[in-house]
Amino acid sequence: MLKKISLPLVLAFLAYAFWVSSDFTEIAAGIALFMFGMLCLEDGFKAFTGGTLESILRKSTDKLWKSLVFGMTSTTLMQSSSLVSLITVSFVSSEMITLAAGIGIIMGANIGTTTGAWLIAGLGLKVDIAAYAMPVLVFGMVFMMQKSKTNKGIGYLMLGFAFLFLGIHFMKEGFESFQQSFDLSEYGMTGFAGLVIFTLIGMAITVIMQSSHATLLIIITALSAGQVSYENALALAIGANLGSTITIILGSIAANLGGKRLAASHVLFNVITAAVAIIFIAQIAWLVDQLASVMGIREDDFLLKLALFHTLFNVLGVLLLMPWVPKIEASLIRFIQFKPKGIEQPLYLVPQALETPATVVSAVKQEVKHLFENAYGLLAHGLSLKRSTIDSSESLSEAVKYTRRIFPIDVEDLYEEKIKSLHNEIVTFIADAQLRESTQAATEELYALRQASRDIVEAVKGMKHLHTNLSQHGLSTNLAVRERYDQIRIHLAEVLRELRQLMATDDDLTHLSLDALRVESQKARRKLIDELDEMIRHRRIAASIATSIMNDEAYVTDIVNNLLDSVSILLKKPQEKVEDSLHLDEKELSELAEKN
Image (cartoon, rainbow, N blue to C red):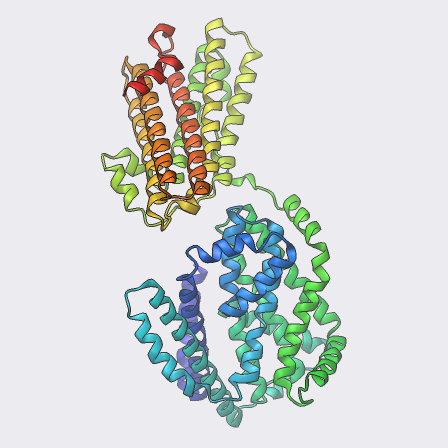
């Protein structure tokens, strides 16, 4: 509701401001071009992050100093701490890097983002960069119109830099014109009150624009035009740092515990850094003056001194908190835990069902079926397929073949919410029932149903391992690897479809159908292993990748066996005692698979 109201208000304010001030129009256009340039840069860099960045990230974060350097250099190159932060959230969420490594990257990104202030203060406002932007804009458009993904990426990068340059130019022109008609410096404040108020203003601007780079551009151009004092500009820069946390907070909303913990560490780092900067601003300003003198920066060159201040207090924050990263990581893991508000509640395990052995068995069986439904949905999404696709008669091969993305689900959180909590309720309910009078038959059935519930839990645990590698290799550019993972997905999806159909029927030959599925599963496994052996011999696939695929196929086999065991119990009729002679044992199953 608030978003629906705020957009018309913003549009109305902008329309009025454009009407009353042409100078404001030029400043706003500069900001818009600058931010659009940043979006183009992000799109350009995303074109090169399909596997290269991920590979570098894993190899560059095994030590804290490496994580710090990676965050600093990647943000300096991309000129987007937002993109680096969001990528880091995704990697911490998928457990591809540790939380400590993610904290190191975020710290480095805070230092890397200060390079933008140096570029704007040292080059952007002293050179007619609009003249350079024009040819870059033309070349960028030519590259972007190409079909090649790489060429498009280059085009977006060039357009991004061109629009950044144009944005800086228009901002500079707008503030210089604004100075002639209205002097914002009259509203400057000194002392601690001014420091706090302008810090909050800088924070508010960054929250609204969701870009500390854009805020720094406003600060530096306003300072160059004399619209804000140097003292107030320092406070605005501190506020910009605080406001930059909004991007990672928004990006962590859909993330799992790892992503939320990383966002919390970012907020903690920026709040502590800002607090240190505010408390010791006089000392830091004195240090800036001393370093500026050593670096040859003129005493009245407040633009470069602002850039130096921005870098200095971020570096001081990193030096202050680096020794505490292990303890910060441990504290975040301890205090930011899974919140049980989304936990699945049992549908059938009501106290009244404990009255008789028959109602206990019926309630538990229905609840285990409920658990199976939850597991079915989680497994389907883990394969990046919709439940409706598996339930339909649609070709699973086609659905898998034309997969465009791997569903970014958090298997760990869903397991806690939908599976583990429900299994715990089933086990507790059975334990309560066993304290009451019961029959031998009911006791045996409850024991079997508890095992069925356990089998379903084990099947989902297998998906936790499988989904990690599927996210990494499921859409591999190596066709041989992609095809093997497609085989794995199709095989498990076919088993899920068959089990759904069996659960919906009342067939006396159910157990024979389950045996047939076991045979087919063994055949599929042997076929995949034989193909992998052939590919390794002909060097079509690396042995390391082949080993990962074999491990994942083993997970699939375990998932299938656990599901078949659980469904076998669920489909057994209450009065039926299935004779062992009707079931095929492991040896018979292997012989059938071998013959076929």
